Image 1 (cartoon, rainbow, N blue to C red):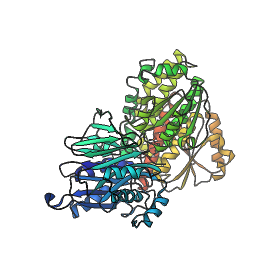
Image 2 (tube, rainbow, N blue to C red):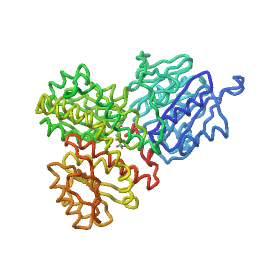
Image 3 (tube, rainbow, N blue to C red):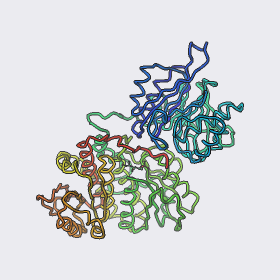
Image 4 (cartoon, protein in one colour):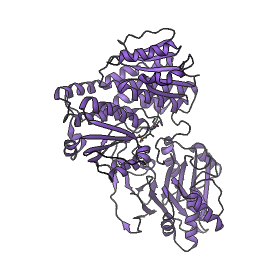
Length: 615
Ligand code: AGP
């Protein structure tokens, strides 16, 4: 989704602004832009704003800055993911009003009313965006005699909605103002230069020291100073966080796309997620943090909230909590939960799951839950220091490493691993016996090796993928805990190959979807050798009887045979406790190969963003 970078320095900052945007590219965007305060003639001329924008990738913006070179000591840059108005140069940020330029992430809900009022005052609008009202509103306060900081403060009080902004003015050439409400913004501290960004990742090439702005805070940076203000305009102090994570290698290496690199990283990142959290036969509860034990002792129910792939992980965890531990667990999509009246049972642990930790709906759900009577909040998350981690009582990190591909792969399987550890930690207080725990942990130890075996099937799956390339619809089927795996398989296929894909619990077939079956509708089935296998087989016979083509990911002993109507991919045998994780991998590979066959933009599929920081 949209990205912001801002810099106040004593050297030409164009390279920092551009590199920052490149580092945020993976989040998804459709246009990019930069605004620099150009100090023409070494300060003998007044400072002028220079703005350049390009539709498409950051590289297009770079080409423009080469054709018409610009430089400056202060500036802002932006990648835009269109919400209000198409991806055009006029709609791209920065937006300008007289001497002022602004970049914005988020949505201003009262933009129509503000636009009408500003038009009446003579402001001319060049774009269809909601963001442009912000820059004119700030300019309007400046024209009434406010300096840039106080004009921004006054303007913010008029906006309803979510924002993170960066603002510069020709009249204050060494200053950048940033502010946030509902969208993330950090400040980076350098040596004789300071920065703002929507994600610290954008600035890791220039600093490792950050201040995470809280809701409704405003920051003013110059090359040698920074000041943070709360919503009352009072200056406040915030702790500096030094990021110590080892810098990952964020290039694609030998791989053609990030997605396939990340699929193949799963054995090692699953190992990383288990590391230090299990002994030979027990889980190490201390790894949940010092406060966890007291909280877990009181848990009577679980509520899990998430979006997209993370919601599918939640759904798997529901089966585990109820089947293994005998603990009631309800799961819900965050965007639904946040807007409805809810009831809470006593001693319910509120769990959120998010790869990014910045998903707007999940954060809003957490904020709502904190006002309700939950026992505590626990986040399963992949990004240290993300908003979700900072705002939850307990954070349990997945150690998937940075996930660049928009389609979540390694984040999902590491979420399942982390959730399984959580189920055992709480479940040992209920129906999970020591003996059962030892068996579960033994299976977890075997996971990385089994994942390697699955990835060795890559070429077989590539071959299978050709049968899907020309199709327009696909149905995914699973039963029990493998139904959410079918959901995840369908989501992967639709988001990167643009083939319509739906998932159903196989038992639901005859209640409607069976009407869709014909020889043109591939049906993918997840078929481990478990107690539901015979039921699943009956469902698949219903498909065959109607001429449907089956693609079955089946345990090698499940008894499926390849014939003209059925293609079988034999999966090595694994225990039921880890099979949802194991069966995910071939479905990821299938989607990947279908997308590559179709020639889509695998890592940045159309219309999607990696981190959904707006509603
Ligand atoms: C996954 O492939 C998707 N891109 C998407 O559904 C994602 O899982 C969802 O937006 C939630 O993101 P989060 O895990 O960062 O909160």
